Length: 161
Image 1 (tube, rainbow, N blue to C red):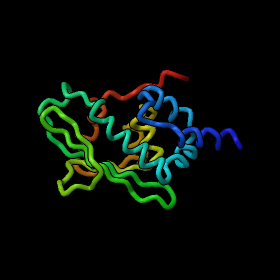
Image 2 (image 1 turned 45 degrees about the horizontal axis):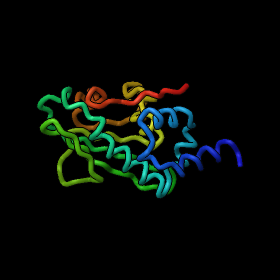
Image 3 (image 1 turned 120 degrees about the vertical axis):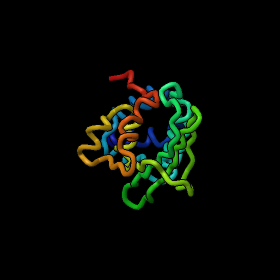
Image 4 (image 1 turned 90 degrees about the vertical axis):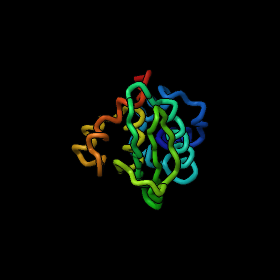
C-alpha cells in the first residue's frame, strides 16, 4: 500500500469526535487535496461533516457575535458521485446551532465550496479571502457577513509542522 493510500485509510478509520481541533488541523495540513477528496466519500464524509458542524457550536465566540441574527447556509459540493451536502448554521441570541439542511428558512448568506477546500478553511489551513478571490469559495447574499465569519469562531491552528 502506498504511503498516500495508507494515510487516507488512517483518516477514514479515525473517530473524529476524539480528535482535538488542533490535531484535526494538523491532519488536514499534512494531507493533499487528493487525500482529502478520498476521505470525503461515502460514510466517512458524513461522519466528518457531522463532527465539524457539531463542533461549530463549541467553537462559537458569542462575545464577538453581539446581537447578530443570521442563517448561514453551507453548500459543500462533493467529489465524483457525492451529492452536495447542505448545512444550515443559525446564529441568534448569543448561540450557534447547525443542522443538516436545507431548512425552510432563508439564508442571509450562502457559502459554496468543495470538500477539500472546506476542510482547509475550517481547520485554519486556508485564507477565506484568498479562497473567495480565487473563486474556490463562492458567497451569495450578505458578503459582508461572510467576510466576518472567522471572528465568530475559534479557528484551530495546527500544532504540528
